[in-house]
Amino acid sequence: MVILFDHVTKVYASQQRPALDDVSLEVEKGEFVFLVGPSGSGKSTFLRLVLREERPTKGSVWVLGKDLSRLSNWKIPALRRQVGTVFQDFRLLPNKTVFENIAFALEVIGKPSGHIKKVVPEVLEVVGLEGKEGRRPDELSGGEQQRVAIARAFVNRPMLLIADEPTGNLDPGTSIGIMKLLDRINKLGTTVVMSTHDSQIVDQMRRRVIELDSGHVVRDQSRGVYGYAR
Amino acid sequence: MRATFVASEVGTGLRRNLTMTIAVIITVAVSLALFGASLLVRAQVSTMKDFWYDKVEVSIFLCSKGSDTPSCAGGAVTAAQRDQIKTDLESLRPLVQEIFYESKADAYARFKEQFKNSPIVSNVSEDALPESFRVKLSDPTKYDVVASAFAGRPGIEQVNDQRQILDKFFRLLGGLQLIALLIALVMLVVTVLLIVNTMRVAAFSRRRETSIMRLVGASNFYIQLPFLLEAALAAGLGAVLAIVGLVAMKSILIDQVLAPSFQFTAFVGWDAVLAIAPIMLVTGVLLAGLAAFFTLRKYLRV
Image 1 (cartoon, one colour):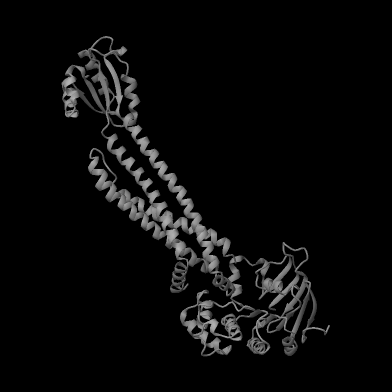
Image 2: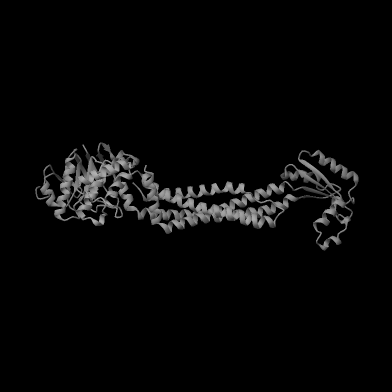
């Protein structure tokens, strides 16, 4: 499996109530999972635990066959190379072009320039941004910027893609385009875990839905909708 | 590892943080110049010690007619006493390297030569100057052996060690060197604090880049390397400036100003400068590198 939470509890030092309370779940290879729930329900904590930005207070988190609580610090970069990440705020470098933004992600993990020149156009085609490699982020629409971010996350063909409210800043029409892209990436073999508040999208896609509330899993449906179906 | 990529990152970082970089270069230059100067003073003291200790002698002044020290109660030294002293000195070889007898006439000649421009010469007669043995020791620090053997013996007025006078002078120079070194250390602490702060600002101004680097799985080393190289490069530039200052100190202050005015003594050579320069460079780069490394560990955490 790709993700395994085994009785995971996370308590932040500044809070008394746990952000996640005894959560156990599995995500299999090739799944597309929506993570829904109100703000403060533990979605972000869940994703941060998967990325090993936080460690669980109790229980263990396994990602891509590795027990993250026993993973030494210097091995974290190797893990993150196999996990793509996309955020609501895109996180692009404003002074670099589309091509350079994606190339940057490859340069900093030491890929040779020949490899970069080959794979960046390929991934730009996957996300539908052919011909825009010379633009800067501020010359692109929000949807296009998010496509660049997805291209950057996907360029290493990761086993797992984490998307933290990727459509949160986009209008409904653009959001549908992004969802189609994530669906396409999922069909290429990458497991996708996406947190969202967008009920329309969840209802349309009919994929697995995990609902969190106050740190508990209150629903885990294999072809779920956003809410009211409990 | 992509060398060109790292190099371009370093260049961007230095340009973006230009004022801080200049501040680092200047403080490194000033503190290292002081540090180098204090090392140069130390080399100068040791050069002078070599030069002077080689020349110092122990003087054994013999009693003349008017001497009023107790050991001279018997009046002027007799020929037998003088011979005995000479034999005893001979027996102290090899500590005693050379023995030179200076008669009243020799002493007067030397006195006239030393004070030839002074009216004092006409007031001093040959008889007022004592005859003496000038003794050169193989180890000038063992003055006590000679002093205890001869001081207070009948016929000997006084045993004098020139080294004691020199030591006072060297202690003064040593004190100056210590002050320079202390100021240099304070300046180096200031430099370290400045580098720590510069690195903090640099890490903050590039947090977007570094957070993306972390996200896509760049290693810590790769994330920190541009920062470390920037700190090392700025410190290296500062060290080079400090070395230029040291070379100027040697070629202008020492060779053109001090050496012509004080010809009686030796000054440090270029070999000392050559030995000190790499110490300055290594100190600067290492200090900056370590300061940056520990700052980044805190501010660029995985």
